[in-house]
Image 1 (spheres, helix red, strand yellow):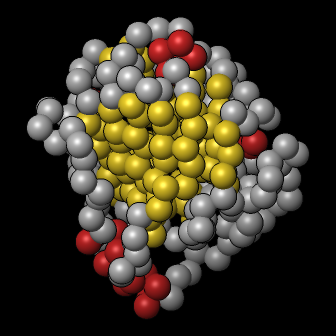
Image 2 (image 1 turned 135 degrees about the vertical axis):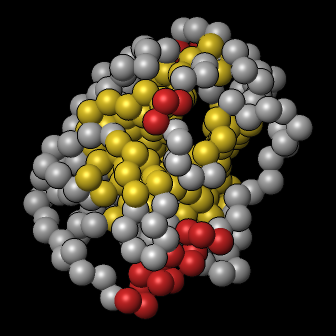
Length: 258
């Protein structure tokens, strides 16, 4: 992995546009809106006692005009890895969907990316740095990765993948979205149908007029893959010698509680 350094100075117009996009982006509608959400963070204000955080993951106040509480998984340092898990476990025998706003930024090239995980290893689970994306070695897991650096087995430096068993070197399914995952904020939505084991990953740019796209679809038995009927859900991320700040601005999960 090559090293990189980035300027910490952003042009005022870009900062203003980003703040507007992050503040006004509208999450996709949910089929589970009538249920009480086990995770509901329009920002991460007050979330400290509701998330188990490990490694470099922390809740901070974002800089710039937006100035809100966010979940930062990596802070742009060398070989960092972070994870964050919601304390309520999910019933994996029931359908759910999760929506989150992401901003991966800071260095060029950016590395290594982040992942949305369902895992049964526990609230202290944290994997490897670099191409491990913070989940390598979390064996009882299914990861949906948003990968921004091309390591040895990756198709490119802008792809989504579903990975089983904590091994990011082997993709169960992989796809390239039409939007950049690095350098611009976007919304992601992961929808799981427990009846059919249908897993879909949608992404949407926060630019005005952008529409949501189905970027990846595959079949996976979540309960069978993690070896449990209920599991923790959350995020991991990592850096190597190429660096980035990897931020979650909001997060909801609509599903029955375990």
